[in-house]
Amino acid sequence: MKRVLITGATSGIGLQLAKDYSAEGWHVTACGRNVLTLQSWAEGRDNVTVLSFDATDTEATKAALVQEDMAYDLVILNAGTCEYIDHGEIDVSLFKRVFDINLFGVLNCIEALQGGFQHGTHLALMGSTAAYLGLPRAEAYGASKAAISYLARSLSVDLESKGVTVSLISPGFVKTPLTDKNDFAMPMLVTPEEASSAIRQGLDKKKVEVHFPKRFSYFLKFLSSLPMAMQLALVRKITRKA
Ligand SMILES: NC(=O)c1ccc[n+]([C@@H]2O[C@H](COP(=O)([O-])OP(=O)(O)OC[C@H]3O[C@@H](n4cnc5c(N)ncnc54)[C@H](OP(=O)(O)O)[C@@H]3O)[C@@H](O)[C@H]2O)c1
Image 1: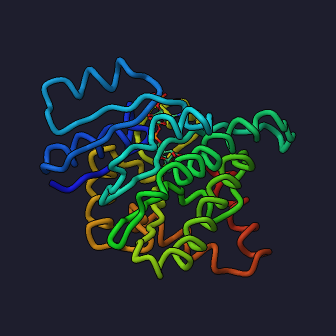
Image 2 (image 1 turned 180 degrees about the vertical axis):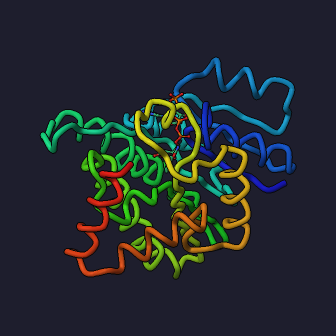
């Protein structure tokens, strides 16, 4: 039986991935802080193990993840958060909160799990299409996801000799508790089911980047390929309208 470990499996994209991989017959190790939520959906599924820990806590993450058998076929480091800033005013504590889970949470998990990496291990990091461009109010969130994008690329080069594949997941807007808080228009919003399907298909093909929905992600990729002055002018125009 193939084994997948998923962080952030208590809600949104992570929960949907956990349900879908479990329905496909994988053994799922579902992680999150909220143990009751994890236990409630894992109940009655004998191919699901739950692990509750705060991924921002290096020691707690190690204690939960370092085990005798850490040989997962697939590791999806998805846990994350989003906080926006207002009027370009920097609030360092907000940046620290966002980076603590979106970047350091991922690093804590990798450090704990890397002893189990072997030929054939597939590591997937949750980024965002927000990392493609400088978007308004997304200074902290976008920067944390740009860091994930860089981390995925670097690790992809460094871990190749060990036979470890690294994929970056770059979703557009997905309807989850994280985006339910947004007070702006979210073009081409997809459901968690659609997101899970796109992610599972992309990871199955061992894509280096799984990005979706395609019309949205290719449009942002195109904008990001333009000279910076043009990019910024277009982003200003488009987001002012939204
Ligand atoms: N929704 C979107 O439009 C979208 C787009 C691009 C990228 N993403 C990324 O996709 C990932 C999942 O987002 P989502 O939309 O599914 O959000 P969500 O429903 O809010 O899920 C976030 C998950 O992260 C977990 N988490 C948060 N802080 C944690 C911590 N300190 N330790 C352990 N787990 C923690 C939460 O579990 P507990 O609270 O139980 O710990 C929850 O399971 C995030 O990395 C997000 O940035 C989302």
